[in-house]
Length: 358
Image 1 (cartoon, rainbow, N blue to C red):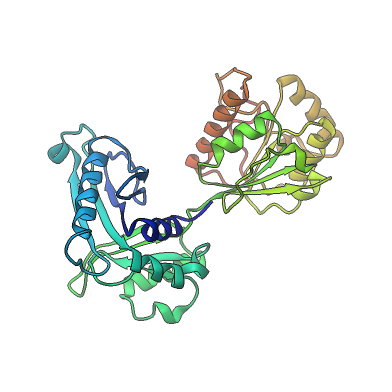
Image 2 (image 1 turned 135 degrees about the horizontal axis):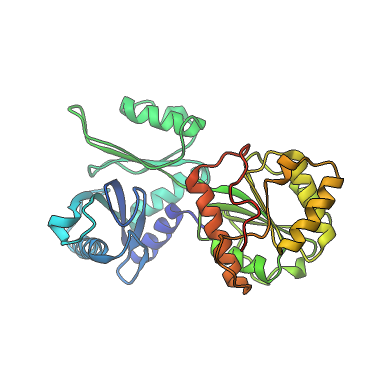
């Protein structure tokens, strides 16, 4: 899995030029949030800013920019913005407002990104003014590369790189001293998720969750238990471990855990280690209410308190979804995890969904 920056650089090098469309500001009811983006090439589009009239108009604008780029010489690092009051300008009933940034990246500019940006593509942030002419910069922890930027931008960059603020898109309005700026992470924030088991449900879950904001550590006991083609990257890491419970001990605080191995003893061992650490954000165990009852007894015999066991979610998935097909379980479980993320549950609080019926 590559970053959006690397994708842009590679496509620009291939096509000669591409346009990246990004929502830099979103107020009220809009199809997508600030930071949503897509890439338009002369032959294709990748990503979405929400579809509908907004996206159609944005694509048409990007195609126009690309058409101009193939004619007369363009300004370096060409950028322009459009303001969309969705009701008045597009006739949409959303009623919100979106500011959209269009960035033309040429092949020569892509080459500069490839040369300068590789070291920061996994941990850095992209910084540039809304105005044309100034290169897009990839910054990480080298202060000498951003000390001369506007003070408000320096503060955001410093706090983002230090972890003092979330790694999320930031739009800084224009001031009397200069243009607006847009700052965004190269990689979106991902919640660590440990998935134990590469069976049918595990595979279905990876297909769903890999498109969402999770950093998946996928664990099983043998290589042949995984599908043949596993596209590993920042959102997915595969681990072969004869003792999956040992991997549970390495999990970071607040990580989510989904347990669905081929063996009840392995499931029990993993649940035991996760509960013993007590620092997880979510612990889900695949199975029925009967399995839950048996596991609660065994875990209680291992010394876990009722308060700790209340945090075990089994069956997994949102209430009311009863299908047992792998895809159904995967979608229902993904929805449950997204509910938890949206609610901002901390790693030390019990899930209100614990023990809910699937």
